[in-house]
Amino acid sequence: MNTLKDSFFRVIDYLRLSITDRCNLKCIYCMPSNGVPPSAHQEILTYEEITRIVRIAAGLGVRKVRLTGGEPLVRKDITFLISSIKKIQGIDDLSMTTNGTLLEEYAEEIADAGLDRINVSIDSLNPEKYREITGGGSLDTVLRGIYSAEKAGLKPIKINMVPIRGFNDDEIIDYARRTINTDYQVRFIELMPSGSVDFWSPGKYITTDEIKGIIETIAPLIPVRLRRNGPSKYFRLKGAKGVVGFISALTHHFCQDCNRIRLTADGKIRPCLFSETEIDLRSPLRNGEPDSEIKRLLRLSVEVKPEGHKILSQITESRNQNENTLYPTIRRQQFSRRPMSKIGG
Ligand code: SAM
Image (cartoon, rainbow, N blue to C red):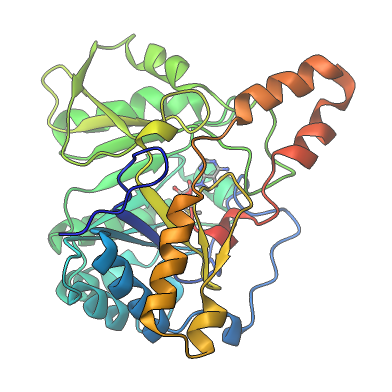
């Protein structure tokens, strides 16, 4: 069996596929307030092109695929893509990150097509706040979607929450409590300076240590080791059925455990979320290049994967340089030119 290793001896076996840059929500930290013009239809990889890339990547050692976006469930005939990827030899884990708004409608179909499990992003359990942060979403619809997903056997269900100071940090304990009687994996993701340039500020993000401290006011967090957890670190509240996880993109040991590369909806391999380096696969695919060339480009993207990002230290440096110009300096240096919906979170 082949193994894909980068220059820092990390095994890269996880491919995150953004299958569309369109989304039916407008989460304030993800989508710039003036919106993002969607890519033209012909710019987006076809399902056949995506499947070919996954097949070649599987031959190199990729084992795990996640469908994301934009919102993956807004793309037509997604069951066709799921069943095509599921048939690829070597892919043993196929999952999706979704906002859950269309799950009630699609859960059974996507499970039948071969999807193994889902992550659902919900940033507030308060219907009003949920509507506010998502630009009009209905919490009730998402909760019904999660119920349908459970019924369809899409397990374990992971719930992603991005704590934002002054907005939903008062809900952290409620989220953690959800793991007591359910087998949900509730994951707290540090707010990253990517996506919505006009939303992020140093005061809004909450570090994993702080989130843990808040949860530990109700019970100690006992470390648990889950199979293939990548950069997430998991813990259990004593006696709980489910677990809580932390994705500390900014503050913690995230990069050394990074096992992933990303494919954008328009066909660029992005070795690191925080680096602008992208390797175009769409042109060679459409120019009729053989598999060996796509293989070479995939290997190259893994070779150039950076050891890590330095966002936090760059932010601190910017702050030290000049308090007043902190925000514009960060904007220039650290924000990705592509919004998250165009990369695939
Ligand atoms: N539409 C799907 C969804 O809502 O899950 C998939 C795409 S969304 C970009 C994937 C994940 O990225 C979500 O969990 C979202 O919370 C996260 N995300 C987007 N922007 C982020 C940011 N600036 N910081 C942290 N997480 C972010």
